[in-house]
Length: 155
Image (tube, rainbow, N blue to C red; front, side, top):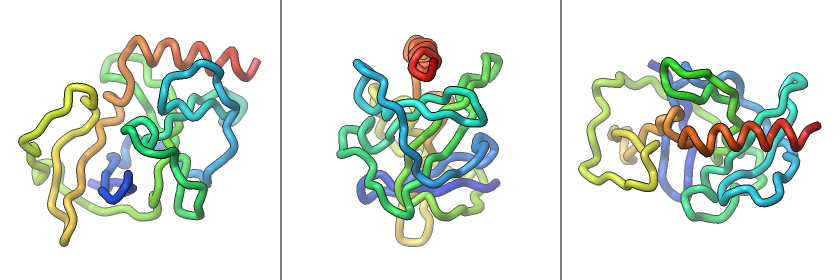
């Protein structure tokens, strides 16, 4: 299966390509006043408001750098069996894909309760790549609130 690779700090991560709708250059987002850390804002995607998160900021780092390799990855977000909404994810170095077999990913042996979206890892050459589970990026409560704020921000 194909994964989109990107970077947070000096570490590599991957999103399953089946969840990716489109990879766009970094765009200006409208700020959402009072939004939680890691919420970059909202942008209009084919006329619909789509909230944007910044994975760098969300994981406690500096906001994503504005560079040619920073992309806005539009993904389908939501648990299986729930409504799938679009979410923009700012990701640095999101310029390549890699083919991995999902069964080759292994549990890292460390879990972070505040980051349920961090999945298993795989060795890729001399680096370890961690699978980001898009459906777990936002809690259901945050997801609902975020889309309400996004719709209000573009009205």
